[in-house]
Image (cartoon, rainbow, N blue to C red):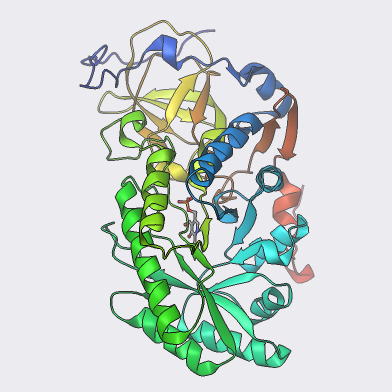
Length: 454
Ligand SMILES: Cc1ncc(COP(=O)(O)O)c(C=O)c1O
């Protein structure tokens, strides 16, 4: 193939420099990946096209079990509830449900999806700031656990309780200072300002709701386990205040999600292996705080809604180099067939980027652009890569959390998703979209139909 002419540029190469952790440069041996869980990348693309999301069932189950063990070994009463928004592909949810996770949903859509998968109402936790009253009614009728976000929702639930003639058990979501900045204070009732106590008073005064749970989610990708220690202590203190002053028995403490995955957050200099504490460190702080602050013999249920930490590392994205160009500042850029349309988390992370073949040539800092005709479409703006021929496949990871839910049908169709089973089987779990998916809901009024002259 004749190579296009390229104006020569002189670049200072940043090869083989190490940062103080011995990482940071591109090392060919580490960065070539020809297979995922034993299945050749080439074969996956041949069969299912590019780009392609690939999930590993083995990694997903392993990660869940690691999290489960860390907590169940330390505390006797734990429930894991799968955060649907993190990844609500049927196959992913089904795997986690088969491991014993219940469902944590934050919309009617997610609620319906969980029910469609066969999850009973009483195994669903219904969270979120926007719960239409009709959905609250369904949730109450089906026995779901509801964590109230604001005062209007207290009134809505009272209305539902009166209409159905039942006393409804509820939880309330709290927000609090745990040292995490910025503080997530937009959801639930604030603890320190007294708003949370006001919510309890309001519930007690209404007489038709029974407070039985406290919920809190302090943020996401939390790198400091001691923030959870503070959260748990504050929750336990508040639970006993509520019990002693109002007679409500708090049966569960739901501490939300927020544990980090082994991804590299933008702006964090340390590599994930150093920056990200282990699940055991989180479990130790959380369970330690519980056991030291609970009253003897009292073991309310500890609920965890961990999302990212469980599924992120199970997901890979295969994408193909479509073209390369030199930027005016001399930097090398590649255009890929996947961008921020399918990789929403590119805004947060510098992913691990591997290539499907050995390539000869010096590495240099590169920009990875996606396929969108939009300036924001940058997968990574600083990654060291050798000269990649057109057609090279990049394997990007971890991408299992928040991408196949937040991806958008913008400019391009969404790609297929496959699951590699524990025995090496490859199954399509979401077909790639085509035009019919996009136009299915559109209606073109007859009068607007244009008759083109051929
Ligand atoms: C209420 C609630 N629970 C659980 C999660 C899952 O969080 P993560 O993926 O950080 O574990 C979220 C995410 O925002 C959330 O809002």
